[in-house]
Image 1 (cartoon, helix red, strand yellow):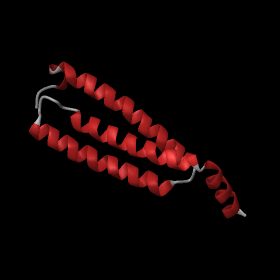
Image 2 (spheres, helix red, strand yellow):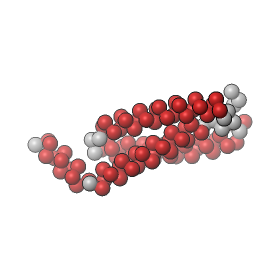
Image 3 (cartoon, helix red, strand yellow):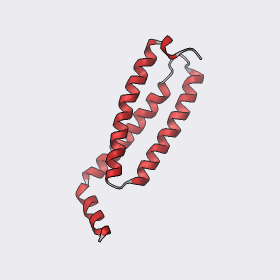
Image 4 (cartoon, one colour):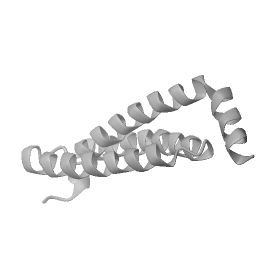
Amino acid sequence: IPLPWDNPYVFHILLISTLILGIFFLNLIILQYTDQYKPVALLCGFFLLTNGLGTFLTIKLYPDLQGLGFLIASLSTAVFSSIYVERILGRWEYVVIKNIANNF
């Protein structure tokens, strides 16, 4: 495997992937704040699976584009987590009242 900095696009792919991963982490923090631990675990498992599979396939099929699997995994999990957070925050009042009711 050649060094990643031999290809100038690898740095840009990894930089964009890391920024998108930050959006995913922000969504995870919001989900943890709303006590949605099962979706957090499922999203993290989905990221682990897509990152591993995507990285393996891109190394085998496109060795010049290292980091593309990480980009695909970051983008897909950020989109899925953003959709789920929007669904949760769209009914934010219900989630808060439900949690208050469950604690009494």
